Image: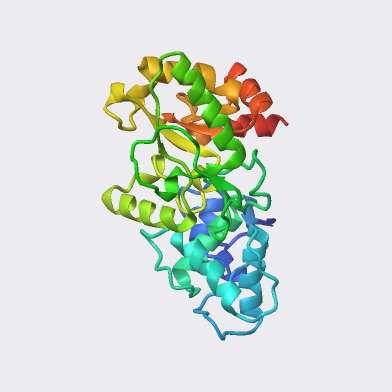
Length: 316
């Protein structure tokens, strides 16, 4: 971002027109609660200014180049060339899929899509470039590519809540092996656990989140937007037990199974990904049933120091 010093006669409307930025994005970037400005006040102005108008497959020109430049800056696999082709359309489409409550997923750039692309640009939102890393940070600011599918998915040899094969039984090979060892230890300790949901594709999360946001405007506190779900990594799984009637509930953390899981999971490379008291850091509610594979050394450090994956990676 660049900066601008307010001079006499300035207004948010005048400044927005001067820099081809919306009033909403100026207020967002500068934490303005109203339209009042002081002379001498320093405002943050976005570097990449997005065009107004509607653009779709077949559109060309400098405006399309700016849209592509913004998508590339976020991490979409786009080479800006000023031609609105299928790659550009698909990138816009996958962005729109994240906000079904506000955007129609049609691959067409318009005023509403412009606003959300601006918010992405100016909130450090990124498409993850190393999704295969077992320490890939997936959250509300770091999204997996819509095309990402782990290559080494297998079904771990553990009891699941259902007998038939479903894609959510899958996990990445290294995580599946570790999970089998964790369950073997649980069985030895007379702890009854069952797998519920492991891998979920980007498109599966589109459907899940779309249904949940229709039911509740607060859905994003407990359900991830497409690309922002750890389940897409193939490294996470939700667990349950008979003592809570096989459901996913926070009370699982108070059961002997939940307490055992928290204590023993790090010994096999897993962490409780969304711990209690860390909601402001993870962005999600407490989920004692959701574990994530990060490898034994990292899992132990995170557990012993009461950290989240965000905090651990920030420190390293």
